Amino acid sequence: MIEVGIVGASGYTGLELVKMLLNHPSFRLNYLATSSGDVMLEELHPALLDLITFPVEEVDVEQVAQRCKLVFLALPHKASMGLARQLIERGVKIVDLSADYRLDRETYEAAYCPHEDPEHLGEAVYGLIEYYREEIKVARLVAGPGCYPTATLLGILPFIPYIDTSAPLFVDAKSGVSGAGKKLTETSHFVTINDNIFAYNPLKHRHAPEIEEKIAKVHGAEVSVNFVPHLIPATRGELVSVYATLKEEIDPRQILENAYETERFIRLREKPVDIKSTAGTHFCDLYAARNGKALFVSSAIDNLLRGAASQALAAANLMMGLDEGAGLPVIAYVP
Ligand SMILES: NC(=O)c1ccc[n+]([C@@H]2O[C@H](COP(=O)([O-])OP(=O)(O)OC[C@H]3O[C@@H](n4cnc5c(N)ncnc54)[C@H](OP(=O)(O)O)[C@@H]3O)[C@@H](O)[C@H]2O)c1
Image (tube, rainbow, N blue to C red):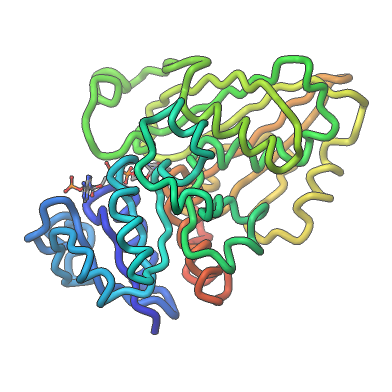
């Protein structure tokens, strides 16, 4: 068994990682931490009572290095990079779920804050599995993509060569409230979000530069992404609709089949996708249609899993030479 740890075990994505690792065929949980520690895991997450008894500690770099071959950092941005730097130097492989290693330095500093670990930023591999699989296999440090960029990029990347990049590309995204993490804010307050739906940070959300940068890296194309996220009254799930203008009248279904024929965790649907069919799974469901040269691409993921924790686990599997799908959940929470 390969010993692994989670820093950020009290958070939403930390919990998803614990759940998957409980039944993983080759990974064994050997270290759990939060910012304050000194608590049992089942006290933090009563849903785990009688399934696992595990102490959660305050973060200690030496303990992580002694007890783990690989660690998941399920932390807010900025908290990750200080820790990642010390862990890489001690030979621990890292999958970071935060934004800290996702972007080029210039893009990161424009959207977030000054970068504290430029030395390792350059070697970090972007963890969008279907597009970076071979690089992930040999990486020491993988950066989990943002949840919205995961759904958006999986949908739109196959179409970029056929899109008129001089016309605006609109990404209309909707997310369940768990996308914001466990901390309560006014927008995630029950009274605000219940029976409600609204856009937030339209055209200036931090995930727009991430989507633009990765389109440029994969296709060498400069695309201006007009990104409008919405919050919806659901716990988990993300639905992304992309509206673009085509250069020619291609067959959208054929483009998706060509791109994802051999991908077992991408499902092509005959009808527009929905969030419930992917909730609780690692799947990304895709659908595309066109009206003349107007293209509509629709994708659905579970933000906590394919948008964060299960994509991180898939990357960890590849980094340790295991089957990509080991321990990944595939049965949706339906009905
Ligand atoms: N939620 C999603 O759908 C989603 C999707 C994609 C990516 N992400 C990214 O994944 C990361 C985790 O997200 P989340 O939703 O799980 O967040 P969360 O629910 O807010 O949990 C954050 C965790 O980080 C811990 N923490 C905070 N500062 C720390 C520090 N300095 N040292 C050690 N532990 C610290 C917290 O521990 P305490 O309880 O001790 O404060 C908590 O366990 C974030 O960077 C987020 O942007 C999230």
